[in-house]
Every structure is written in structure tokens, then in C-alpha cells.
Picture 1 (cartoon, helix red, strand yellow):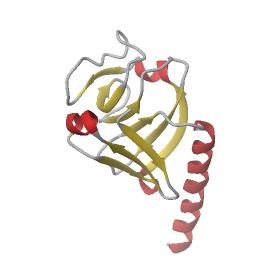
Picture 2 (cartoon, rainbow, N blue to C red; picture 1 turned 180 degrees about the vertical axis):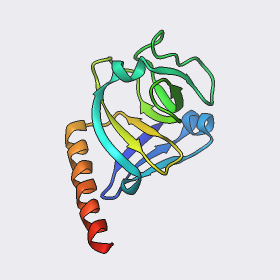
Picture 3 (cartoon, rainbow, N blue to C red; picture 1 turned 90 degrees about the horizontal axis):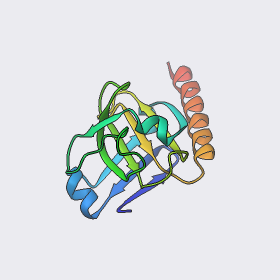
Picture 4 (cartoon, one colour; picture 1 turned 90 degrees about the vertical axis):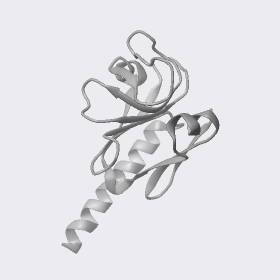
Length: 139
């Protein structure tokens, strides 16, 4: 896959290269924890069924008619108002994906295929809880 994901202490970074970089007109997308409203792990098929099409690049990405295909880039679909950024290789519908619902960001949602999804979700949720406490003390 010509995209790499890095989960850091304060952000998740998707780095694109090769055709993924060219088709999306960007080299990286950064999801700061301050922009994350919620983090969850959801099975691929329930998310993919709602994808209607991608916003740039070529090829159809209708998730209902063409499930389990490689999806990297900006997608539009039903149920989420705004753009979604996907970094997901081809794979089974039962695969668990990291889903970040975002606020004050270019994207409304990020859908990412990453190892140890449950552990990453727990770490992000812990960080979000800690940041809320810090923000409340500083106010």
C-alpha cells in the first residue's frame, strides 16, 4: 500500500506516496487529537455500504456494489455530512477499522485500517479524556 499510518502521542498521520499521493493531491493528512470527537472500531462492511463515490481520482467506489476494494482518499457517502478520508487496503468485510469522527477539520470522518485497532481506540480515548480534564483546569 502506498500509504502509511502513524499513531503518535497527539495525532494520527496518514502519509501518502506514489499514485495515492498523485490521485489525492496531497502527501499527508494529519488528525490531531484536538480535532477528534470520538474514536471507535467498526466492521468494514457496515461502513463501506454507505460509500457512494470518491471525490478525486478515477474509478468507481460505490461501496454497496463494489465491497472490499482498496480505498485511499476522500469519499462521500450517506449518513455522514461532509467528506471522509479513507486509508484502507482491499480486505474482508469483517475487518475492524479505526473510525475517527472529527470536528473543526477538513474531513468529517477518517476511516483507517491499522493493526491493533482496539488498543489504538483505547489509547486515543484515554488521551481525549486526559485532554478534556486539562482544558477544564485551564479554563
